[in-house]
Length: 434
Ligand code: URA
Image (cartoon, rainbow, N blue to C red; front, top):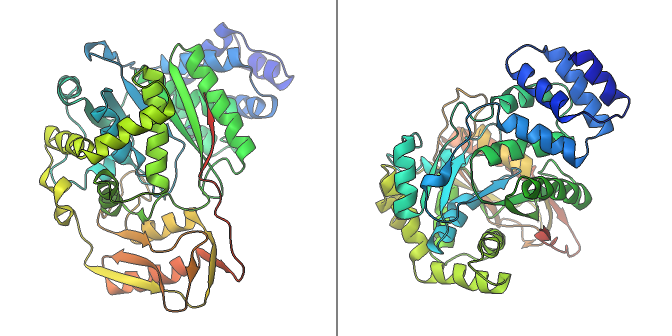
């Protein structure tokens, strides 16, 4: 088989066979196909597309390029969640304990943040002593015992995607639905869960700018999940402003704790109830979304969800007292309110730029080796549609120094736009795709 022939097939709008796709993925992973040929192929796929059969073949071949987790040693139904990435996205910290408290098993592999979006692992490390690198043995043991464990992805999970994603990133070939689907689903399938729920973000702070684009991606992801024999559902959510109020690692943990204590309603809780509802109904643990919602809210009300998080932290070597006493989490030395300079209604908060403010404060990674400051970030005081008077606080900056706080305050003001007329808040949950 010659890669030049395969590129020509796709360039001319043809279909690649299962054998051709597997040859291309495995040979590229082994370094036998050069980057320039794979770039041409990715561009041909971006322009010509792939059908479901080709996308499934690509997903399965990528999944088998490395280690595939066998979760059969865990008793019960295993559920996992994936988000296409957003600013202030602390969903896993709330959803996973809630779902585990309702009887699901969560054996989750998470990533670290790079750039302006934080990763779940970094957030969990805000708990003093928390270990993300526990052995496979202990991982299984913990899930069987407490129902929940969250670790870093093993180095050998889908090596094909590590190479391919890095290549797509520098060749303008990221925004292709079949390539995104195979990239995400190969990793999720390799992680071994039976049930997979997906949060597809849509809006200015996301990959997919419109609901139509997000729906196309959500349908592609769920179709491939089902073709791969998994129970799979997706929710499309708004990313025209950060999720919740906090952006920054320990600050997001504090917000997640407030939701788990039942003290905060709003978009973050709604998202967790929706994703958790999809998990419980797909698992057959609830008859419908309303019943699932009741179970999840009861887990919060009765303190069982918060207790699950404490068990997770304890089982992975962390100080679980911080779950009940957030003052034990990292605290920034300087907290500076950002007063509004004019009156109006908030008409826009650029999510990506708020993420960059947190990064400027030291809360995000510039490259893989960066050491991040877990204590810093931004806590919004106003969101889309809120009325503001001059001098009222738009947000609080949590900074390592006065100087950094002043710089961040300037940058943060530029994230907000105001209108003199009322602004309707966009619907947060845009659609559910099953
Ligand atoms: N996230 C992934 O993991 N892969 C993509 O291709 C895009 C987003």
